[in-house]
Length: 294
Ligand code: CP
Image (cartoon, rainbow, N blue to C red; front, side, top):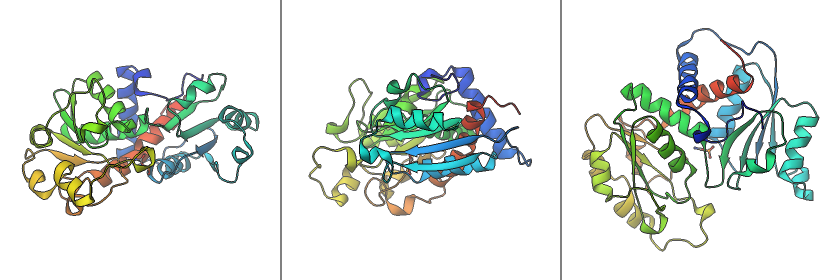
């Protein structure tokens, strides 16, 4: 595996993680249109749907001067039974210098140890979503200037969420805390749970998660209205947040299910800021993948 790959948050040291955030911040403030010293050929391989991750990677790559190709399994030789390994090995063999991969299998990259080009994980099943976590961290850092003693409440479909696990690892590494809330059926063993009202009222960051219908074997028998009242961020709950606390959500948002639609663009919501930060973070990880220096 290439050492400039980014697969999981826990593979990064604290210094490496902070280095990526520092580069992302520089991309945010720099007036200069910084590009990689050499043109690089990169492919975005998405085996699952995506809007934000896919197209913010593509935007980042274009801004860095990469030559970019976008692959979807549909219409490719995956439909003839080609394996993930053979697909990625093919991209390597025909000259691609890095790949971004989203795949439904948890830790799909364990099958790719013999691939030499950098692999940037754009989400693996219910496992990891390192670049989402990094853009969440950048958003928190811009707000509070620190992670120490910042309390993040992650609420909703925790068991299927790669965002929840990646953020828990990162916040613990950086001196913050994560607490969790949501339906009992979707809890994860070993994660600290609390009542939703207490979680929201005591948090600096309230991170709502959507119900990942595509990963559920059976559907929860509850209407959208009932879910919002029991487990969602309602206007009444939002009014009890700490004065400085912010609302986050990795998106896509199911408006009026996990969050009242009027809160998505409320003054204390950073949901669209997270998306803008996604481009900055992905520029930083593409720069790192190619070992480039400012
Ligand atoms: N947050 C996130 O991963 O969104 P997409 O599924 O649209 O990439």
